[in-house]
Length: 301
Image 1 (cartoon, rainbow, N blue to C red):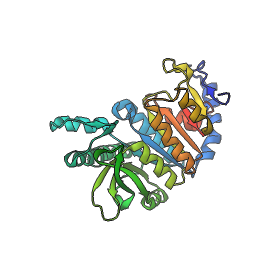
Image 2: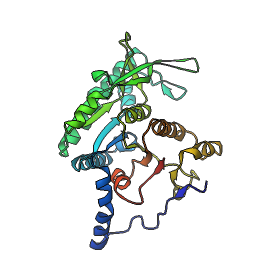
Image 3: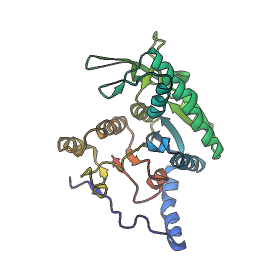
Image 4: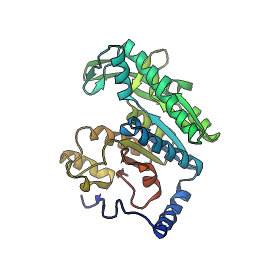
């Protein structure tokens, strides 16, 4: 545990005068140079997607990163929006082992909400902020292929696990100066014309690996990994990959944090050098992570 670093919050919230602003910009300059031309995959969801003010802040961050020459790929889910639409049509949301049961009718709604509404809403905001964005789903150009999940023998319907990522369309868009925005609906494997509902965190991690990204960031509804879940000042800012099993055994990594950490490990094992879990409830958390010494959230490396 000696390698774990706890965040120091003593300067948080301080009002910056001109001298401190210049210090911030000088501190950020090496990071600008470090990330130009590199690919960063951001999984977008949680409160940052539901809260309009936070949504605007995330889109501004994405456009700024893109403007200075960073290749940004935005991957999004949309569970709450799917729930709302299911309520509107009078269909009950059903979960099995924490995963949404997706029958044929639910799959139609998932595809409609993710690819037809949310994806285009996000693209529209990015365009309004001055970015160049193109919306995709995992079906487009066969970007994501999946097979039906068999989890502990439970039937989850059209819930899939990504088996192949074909990133050529994403690379083409990046080369042409666009921000790809990807919704996580996947096509079945060869011979299977079904569409599958895919966990967005898992899909984003696999896309990061396929793109040989330098960084994989998950925007979440929590500060990061905490030594004490009831004490936000106990945030662990850096976790070396070999210490993760020990943190799981001691219960520091538990509950809903486990699958997010597993996605980070998946990306790391696939060659992504750094992965991050950051608090999407903090305005401009993405910029703080990218361009400051202090960073934000938890980095697993």
